[in-house]
Length: 233
Image (cartoon, rainbow, N blue to C red; front, side, top):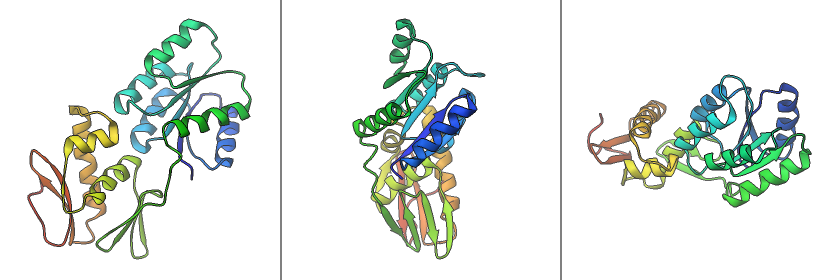
């Protein structure tokens, strides 16, 4: 896959057409029909690019984008909108829009703009990064953790955190560095999220007693293979 796109749009027919088109271009596409569902799916699965309608039920695209921007200030955002007023466009860019595409649009233009966002943010540089963690094989691109024939699928954020720890195995990675790498922001909300994802990763790695994620209390986390170091919380 070239990268993950979160498509948030309340027109079901348009979602089907756009999602199929983008998948045909090699992208992994997650869809949502409103801003509430879109935000929830971003929290659990993440995305390299977000494509969102402005006018949606429950939570509009602007409100959703504000929440996503708090989680990930740098994720590219492409707004789809039937509105042509400069005030709406200006508001979108103030929120942090990367690009705008007015409805109705040609699918070819959408593809061109999405590709440009991936290039601009180097989101298309997806290599097959694989780490051996004791008896586990962690594939960053696939977001999978394998132990023999058993495969565990990781969420986007679990995979991003484990990648940072695996790349620095045997070394303590500061919590602030982990948050900046994953969310581009060090704050209490993301600190709580980080703590929760660490516990999920520990459960995913629990079948091998030689592999541990160790808490260096008040400092950060270390991925170890063999004897434990430090203290878990």
